[in-house]
Amino acid sequence: MLDNTCYKSQDIPMLPTEMKRLLGLICLAVTCPVFGQVQVTEELRLSGSQGANAIIGLADPATHDAAITVSGSVKTGGYTWCTGTVSGDTIVLSSAPGIVGYTDGQVVRFASPTALQGTRFLKSAGLAALPVVRPDGLPLTPGQIPSGYVVEAVKAGDRFFVMSTLNSGCPPGFIQAHENLCIEAQSVPNQLFKQGVERCAKLGGKLCNWDEYIAACTLVQGQLTGMFVDWEWIDDSSNHGHGADQAGRFTCVSQRHWGLLPVTPYRSRCCFNP
Image (cartoon, rainbow, N blue to C red):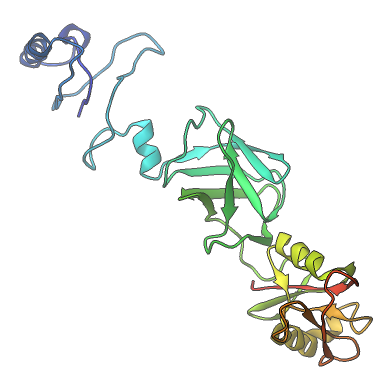
């Protein structure tokens, strides 16, 4: 299907004589460049010079067996291979030909230039940066995108969804307490509550809640370090809106409420679902 293009019959030597005459009549009738739509049922062979063999102005394919244009392939899930570089928390992609705009369903592939985790953004050179997330919409978890890993991401709405993450157990530095829980092996000292929350979020996790903390402490206590050294922040507040709970000072079941969040630093430990 040749859409939105007016052809001179002498430019297409392989067409039958009747088709050439028909094309000539179409151009005379509508006066180029007022374009018509022509269905070619014979073989079409281009004989121009190298680099000039092209049909310009094809519309997106209207049927499953029509010619696929570049824009049509992008919209129907075509892949663009890119090279990625790191700029702060953003992966900047470059490709040939370059990506000139985002389209829902657009898929990009690139070898990750670094290990990706937490809040990250993806952009094509010259375009806006969009958040990049897991298929479930959550930030990338540590270990899911190692350096050099081939990433496949699809643009949907205002985000890129990574469809090729690794999901095999817990990443380095975390212990698998059970099939639905990874806990950080080493607690981190000198953390205000907000700092602990932000640190875990950047890793793609969160502070452990009471259930997670006591389960991990009970099941894998021997593999955790920094236990019972000091209080650790947990993701609970005991219905007090201006404070948070702490756990693990003396035993697995040690717990207390602390109401002065910005004042005193304590230890923090992150959890996430693998």
